[in-house]
Image 1 (cartoon, helix red, strand yellow):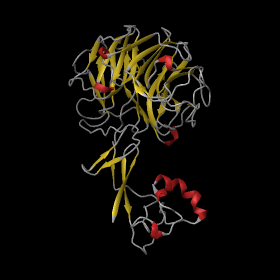
Image 2 (cartoon, one colour):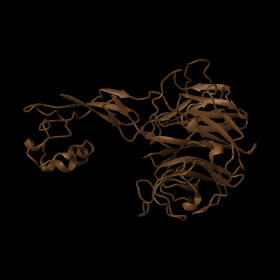
Image 3 (cartoon, one colour):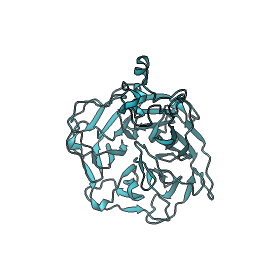
Image 4 (cartoon, rainbow, N blue to C red):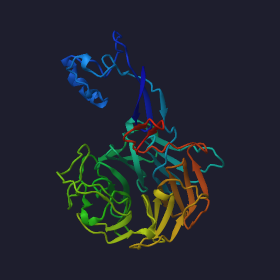
Length: 441
């Protein structure tokens, strides 16, 4: 008798669960054994819990176990999966441009990497473009890499890890391969967005679940605490993602999905949770809800439970899972990567209320599929889009509007390569009626 079990990682791994008949010798390294000696129990407890073995009474006689499980074992050790569902190519998430040096940097949560490309690199057909550099490997410490930004003056790359990473990492421009970061900062759990204000020498980080914005010194590292925190009921923050720290206009602009997850947010400028601390306070659970997506704006010096000075929200906006944002301060415009309907929506920087975008880039000619990243290249009047739903980055004119083709396409996989679309898969279910594996992300 053979069974299969599935593990969710960046892909899906399917392993064999082999049942044995009485008298068979359990395989070496079995991690779901028959009642173990007491000396082994403490060591195996975590493994047994993870593999569902704790449903069995480890002190009972084998005859009282479910039929066929008296000598059942799970293959252990370095065992190859029966098959794997995974995307072998990078998935482009966040994008930023250094136009003076003609470099583009992109984050890749699928391969846990940061890639750099020539600004003018483009696929002439269906071929993939080789990156200039790729920062990837266990020494980097990167996991689910969400946002990336750069300090152009110091030629440094900043990245922040979502999910269980809980770190902001800084690398030099020329870093390549399996290298350690120059410095690491512990940030609150579920950090997502990242933006530097050169004018203020500060960096802002958005945090999804606790619904807060934390502001640090640009050179903060280790366990350094934030300078201030924006959080509380009055802020209107709801599952914040992309943000832009506008030091010229002394504002912080935030894209909110709108999810109010049911944990009451402690008001005030309280210290942020640091790495490894999952609960900052004993906060009560209240009724969760979904607010409409929004863009909220705060003074750069804001801290604590403060209301936004402006908010873009409502049916006319078309906001739907707004991800990264960027600001063109020459035209006073905000570009939003609108993941929910595969569009780029442009608003006036000073807009407020339920307003329609002044331009929308959307349609089959655009090639926009599940965008996560958007970035202006003001020197060359271009707008970059990182497609999470496709293996491409697209370049448009700053003034592009409607169903228009991009100026250039940068592919990081051969044209037509399928995208698995895994993003933090946290569970697995099997639909026996339809013979399908369900993966919530």
